[in-house]
Structure formats: structure tokens, C-alpha cells
Image 1 (cartoon, rainbow, N blue to C red):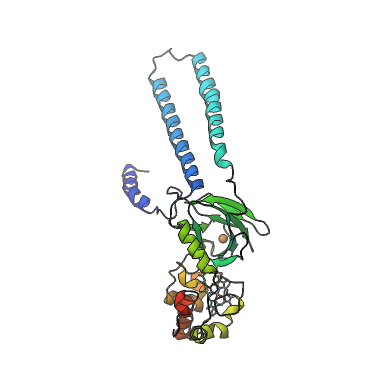
Image 2: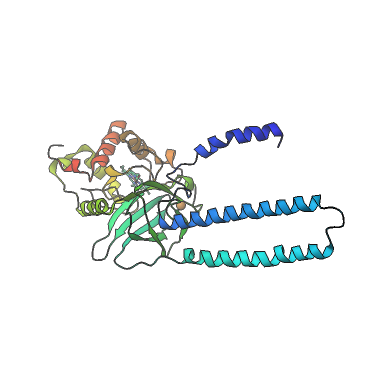
Length: 335
Ligand SMILES: [Cu+2]
């Protein structure tokens, strides 16, 4: 690199760092596991720096030493100390210090279990608690802060990997197997997770939001979400609901007031989601309609057929109905 290039590179640094966001960063942890990983990383980086500086100092001293002062014997002593004794001590200390971080957190059957299944290219989510029916959702995970939560990770098609950088390390999702990731969120907020294992054409278009909530707010949300949406007459007569039935969307999706399918994401509470298509689009009515008419334009390889036969106004009516489905608005009489 020429010197002027190096200057430009340095000048661009702040810009590059500005690209690091706090919503998806292992440097801005909101969970216990990620915090201990960050601590380890800082110690390793600082230790590495100290060692590199130490070597540089020894090098500078050796270069400046008067002739005859450096004997073979002293050199060998240095090699023995810095090449064997110091590394043994440092590595042993590091191992002992990092062992607790490798031990999985203990969890009980009473803790909240969240089953997350990787699909091409979205996330199937089920909240499971002792003594209650699982609550189905997709492409978004809500969790209480300050409580132990067990993620049960699996996949239906190919291997995926769940990675919420601010919460914990990566964990593979393997078909036919359940991997457990025990975590504890510490700070409320909205964070992002991604798929960290190449899983097909739209691997990079497979993300999700994690919403860490105060425990009371989380409990209230879970209780409300468990109540099946009422089918009011007006909701059933809604043009969108009729289209949903006519087009057979219910064979793959379950949504309130429609027969249920399980091939695609659960749409019962689509109205409260923060994203469309697993973290790739804002869930506006216009985007939802565009996605319904041509999902592959946004997500190559997505396993939903295109509905180009739908007129624009029909797609919009469907999208508007989905946005209302499961939200209190839908239950208002006269809508
Ligand atoms: Cu994936």
C-alpha cells in the first residue's frame, strides 16, 4: 500500500465503523453469554497487543546491543523462557479462566422454551411452556429479560445456524436433531439475528428481530397472544379474507379465520410483526401486496408460489386484511 493510500484508508475508518450498528453486533451485547464472550475477546486482544509490543521492545534492544553482548547462551535462555515457560503459563491461565464461560447455563423445565426451526428461508417459532399449548409464530422472537430462556434449535430442510450476535454465539440447526442454547437477555430492546450457515439461494435474506421485553410486558403479550382471535362477522366478510380462502393461501399459512396450513409462516399475528419476509422488508401493505404477487423478486428460491394472477387491488385487499388479522382492530365490529 502506498503512503497516500494508507492515508485514505485511515480517513475512511470512521465511516467503516459507522457501519457497525448496535442492533446486530457482538460488540454491543444485551445478553449474558455475549457479554462473557466480549470480555474474553477484549482480554485476548489486549494480551496479544502486550505480547506484540514486548517482542518489538526485545527486538529493538537486540538490534541496538553492543557487539559481543548477545551470547548464544543468553539467546537460548530467552528462547526457553519466551518460547516455552511464558506460553505454558499464559495458555494454562487462559484455559482455566475461560472454562466457566464454556459451561452451558443450567435450565429447568419451568423455564420458557422457544423452539426455532430453520426453513428455506424463514424461521418457524413456537413458544413452549410447561402445561400450555405451544404458541406459534414466525420470523420474530420475543423474550423476557432477566429470565433463563432455552432455545430449542432444529431445521426441516438443510442445516441453518441461529446467530443473535448481541445475545450469544452461533448454534447450528440440524434436521432431526434439537440443539439447546440457553441464554439470558439483560437489556430490553430490539436486536437482530441472522442465519449463519449457507443454506441456499436466499441464505443472506434470512434474518429476524429479537425483541427483549421487560418480564411483565412479555407475560402480558404472551397471555394476549394465546387468546385465539375472534372471528367477527365483518372480519369473515372482509374482501381480504375471502381472497385468502379463494386463493388457497390457507393450505400453507394459518391466519385467523382461515383453515390452517403449516408449510409457510404463521400469519395469525402478522399485523404486529416488524418485518416481512424474514427481516428483509418493512411490512407495509404495499410491500406485503408486492410480496404476495411475486415473492421471488424479493427472495429467489422462496417456497411460495407467485400470485401474478391477482389484480393489484386484490393483492392490496389481502395485504390489508393480513395486517389487521389477529390485531384488536380486526375484532372491532363494523370493520
Ligand atoms: Cu438459513
